[in-house]
Length: 126
Image (cartoon, rainbow, N blue to C red; front, side, top):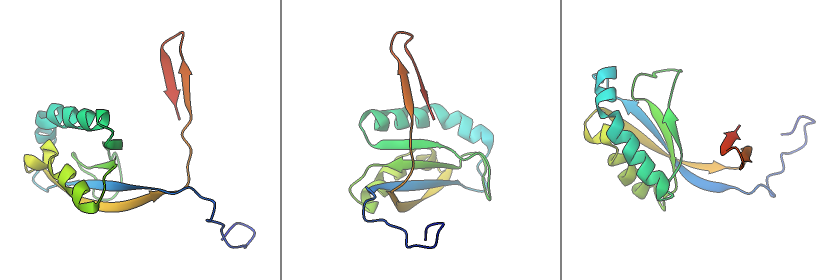
């Protein structure tokens, strides 16, 4: 419902489907474990980003159950099985430091603003 009580119009919203991976560290995972494997994890993510697979990714910084190694990654994949196979190759998962859950996620609302300053070689995003 909208603020005035009328039905929410969704017919014109351009939905796009992704796979949201919620990464959950095991109870035995320590910050030192995460730091030891962080370089491999970041290299893996950057490779997937360059291949057009990773849309967004980053650590969770607060909230229920958040601990070192908790994070969210949004993937472009053809199926939940494909997304799970990608997530299973995460060096943190391979090292036995965390598990993950796969969620189908349809993005329908939101905005990203990007400003490129070509002469200064800078960008900002919000």
